[in-house]
Length: 352
Image (cartoon, rainbow, N blue to C red; front, side, top):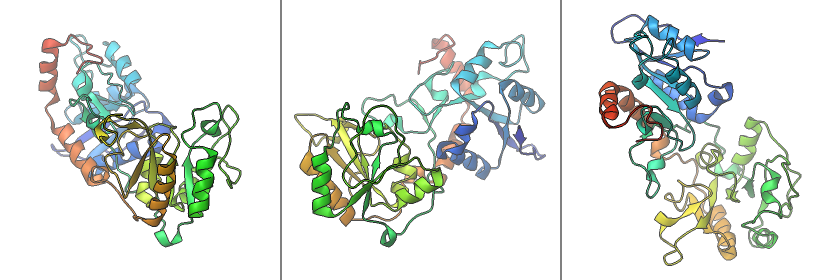
């Protein structure tokens, strides 16, 4: 069902249309915090069923619509539809392409005008050698879940493996049964995880109860009772690290699978399960190189001995998202489009 927040009268009213986003997208922090930031900036948010409905709504109040947020599939469908959707000489009341922004989780800079029009939830520009000319909007984890005080945490390590297949002998497992056993012996910690069966035969760590797939609220609560979250290589760039671990005071053991052999402590050359956390370092993140078995045991021991309480990086506060959103919305994208098309024949797609 289409939901629309009534447009208030007045020349300064602004609105943002959000058509064609799948329902499951609207139940994750990356999207919810954007909507909250929009409302905090007094934008009216209009949710359309699809891009054609968005185009119809746009024709009603074209001067008030500051941006239209879609996924890249919907975006290019509008780009191709020059009779009903995109503004052209034949369709002067259509949506200008410079007002359309794509929303994508991964670094897939697919937009007819280039990377600047892709709203990214991750600060990909921080990666060594990454394209710096991209639009980082981000998201907030402040309201992601309820915090469990350190005193109520269990002597538990949660394994970040959404499928038991991630622990299959057919995989190149970063941590062995010996690693898990030694850690239990030295720290007294026990293990837990929430995972589906997936494909393949898994070898679960010692003392692990039969894992299950939990509803989100149950999963968050059980994870919040843990002292440390252990990365095993997959899933890559999981949201669980942020909204289910650090913001709940659960430390993270980040698996590093690439580094400079000549200078292994150079964090700019590190690659691991999560690409953005190595810069945090202790006491929030314990970066351990794959194969460093003694380091694995030591990191867990240090982590459970040095709890941190709730932690939210500055860039993941709603105030930071709000500031970045305001800068993006207030930018003169019409002029930006003119600059872009001088050297880039549309569609620019992956151009920057």
